[in-house]
Length: 216
Image (tube, rainbow, N blue to C red; front, side, top):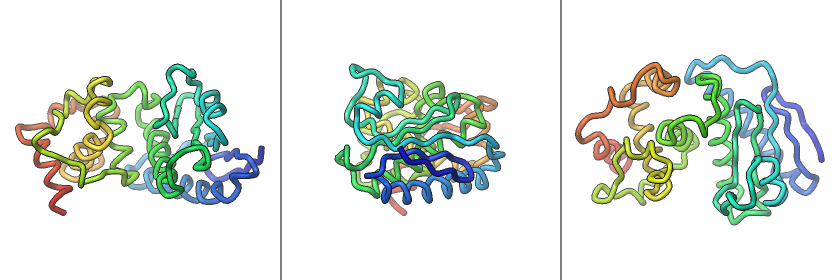
């Protein structure tokens, strides 16, 4: 396995992923700097490890999942407490390189915000954690939004409801709207549980959030 030490990450990857790794290195380092600066988060001084897994078997092991819990859509994983990110190689998934680089950005957001909460994303509400990561990684799909079937924001705090109701896309819309409307510092306070999310929601919040993306 090859290694490259960047400013914030120690990258590990197999030789066959060398070309992809160069894009991952640039994307991860740039995204970490951008999020840290935009949200006034003090960067960690200790390196995080970012592993490009050549196949699903190694991804399951490195991400510390089980074969039973793994699902095909799982192509990225971040664990702030263990200071590790895992990204599945595009050659082992049905995602394009651009889609996988968006996954890199997404997981780096989780790592950057770990400094805010001290927790891994799995320990934060999926609405708040995944929503911010989806929005900042530019993974929102406005063409798939529908106000007539949209989920209630607070219900997306429930993991089962989240996965059953296109939680990634809608949480990205809701948290993206919240960040734009109330500011980055408020999102940080909500993320760190110093402010309740409910304080910033109102009747019609979800529809306004959708409109802000669909009508851009």
